[in-house]
Length: 119
Image (cartoon, rainbow, N blue to C red; front, side):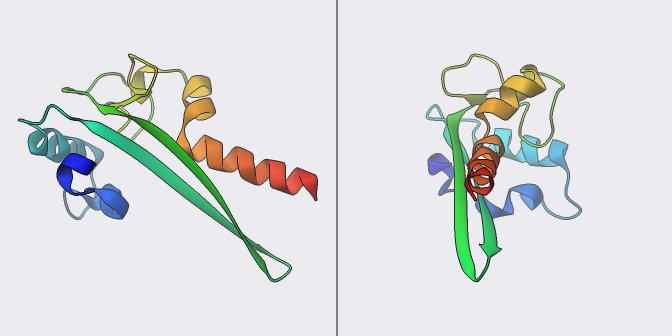
């Protein structure tokens, strides 16, 4: 997140320390954002395929904001806090089908599938 100098970044799974804990990560994030109103966030996934000596990258990104409280019970990780752009619900409140169609992982995976199908 920009407001947190790009934290939690690549350390998102262990943001609150080891052993990793989704609840602890979410609590730490909410505490860090306690007095922050600009809560823009994004998730990025990059899949890498090395085939026949060539490297291919497939990137998916989803932008959104961080809620002021956890909402929903679907998903994992930051899903109860992340509200994707264009939605009022957190990832944890959306159905798996909707979440997968708009998520960073889903977008990167769809690019990979399209690439593999073109070969």
